[in-house]
Image (cartoon, rainbow over all chains, first blue to last red; front, side):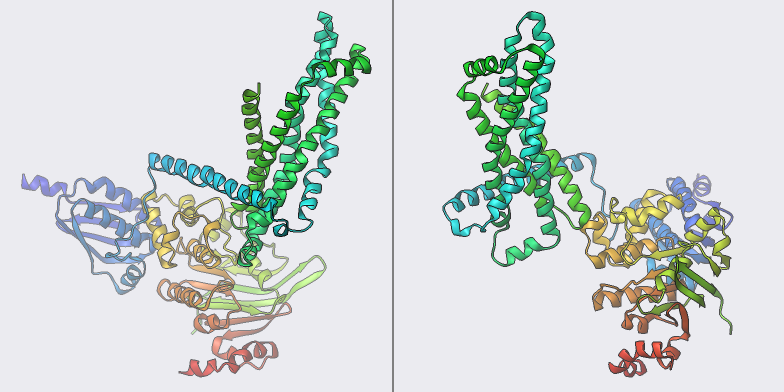
Length: 380
Length: 256
């Protein structure tokens, strides 16, 4: 019995003809080279043999080693760690001076118990990410919104706190400069809506209802939504990029250390500008869209402008206009808040600016569409 | 006694279009020594280094590294040679999409078949050498400039290369971090017998680590020799460079 056991717990193997490993009794002798190439094979062989080892203590005899590198030292450390986990004590002995030097240089200090930090497990990782999402995105967004609205409201009554000219400047950038593109796009969309419905309506002899279709779809849906998407694309990205650049170049820190609140100084004028110009943009968009629809109705369904306008006056309700106004304020706030939220979140470097700008546009367009659906349901 | 040479550059010439950068550069570096390439801005240091690393084609002259002529290597041989050298870039050159640990582990993962556990241990140990173990899971964008340099050094030495190239390792470091870095470089030299070729301007660093100085001026090597000879050189450019130190009585300290 004893013989058998002894036979199982001694072994020897050779790694790449360069390293010879012998386990006999309590001595494990290594001779040859122990470098990166041999280390891989040594650890693999050793882990395969680990379960056969029944000794309580092991002595590594390193007297035969001629060369070792950091991977070799770490392989020894790793093997001893595995032995320790199995309850086997081990020690390194008889290393030639040059080998011992390298072991001293690379071998981790035992008392520190240093080991690479553990990778988080799957659920830990998922939980961490969900927590991160809520704590830094949802909560962070709400905090920023609260802060900006607070200053937005109080600064209405404190004209001196506002930066002179900044509001007008931003209104031009966000609103006035967007007029042409908004008008052009909604005109085209109104035209196309009428064009596509013309064929269908003609079949039923319901030509006049093209007016209902165009007016309702433009006023309650297309006008506000297209405007908001365009503003998000134009100004949402600009806001994110501007704030992100200011943060990267430490301008925001400079503002803070001068006792100025960056939210109040940078974001509030943009919020005013966007909230004030958005309703006007939507009005322009509505007019252009209906004009486009009217043109198409005239061309394809022979509806004269008088008939179109008369029918429009009959069916238009104030409600659509009020809803558009409400929507414009919600969209404006969402676009400015999202842009500035991501701008403030930028991490070091120019690359970060590009990243947050992209994310800001995608998120603000998404939020605008989600808000549009919610408001559509509420004001149905 | 003639020392073994790890690097020999002979009559290297380089030009960017019309602008001649190196006219005739020859020098060598010995095994197990720190060779510092010095020179003012525009003297061609970076161009020399890029030639040594095989990043620029050699127009005229020869560069032989570890006994191999860099210009005539096939691609496979070039890769073999790269495995025997570590390069430590001025700005780190860390991949931003990977964590520090993944950056350092990259050569091990790609070129060896060590088990992942052991790779983690090696990476952790190497990060320990540069005092950066806490940054294991951080991304390069979360590191300070000095930390990024140390992470880059950990990556450069992860394969225990016999030869290490450093491009301005000390730039932007505070004196204390610089001293730690120098100690590490000395350790690499003394204990691992690593040959180190370094481009640097840090005078204190040069005094601590350099064995041999190669001084470039306007595309020509104007001085090549041991540090103590460089300190007493009468060559104007070299003299001017080291005169800063003379003013600071550092030589007194050196004698001590």
